[in-house]
Image 1 (tube, one colour):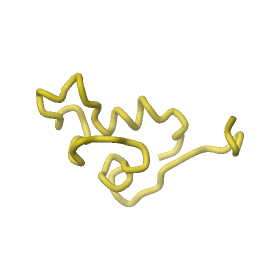
Image 2: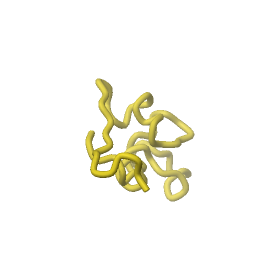
Image 3: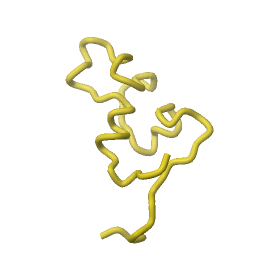
Length: 65
C-alpha cells in the first residue's frame, strides 16, 4: 500500500534525467555512461539494462519527469 495514495511520484533535475546523478535514485548500472542501449558495449547487450530502459520499464511509480 502506498503511503500517499493518489499522489504522483516524480524526478526534478537540471541534468538529463538519465544522467549519473538523477539516475542514482532509480537505476543500477556498471558504468555511468550507459544511458541508452546504443551506448552499451556489444558484450553487455542482453545482459545489462541501460539507464533509460530502467527508468521506463522498472519504475512504474515514477509518473512525472
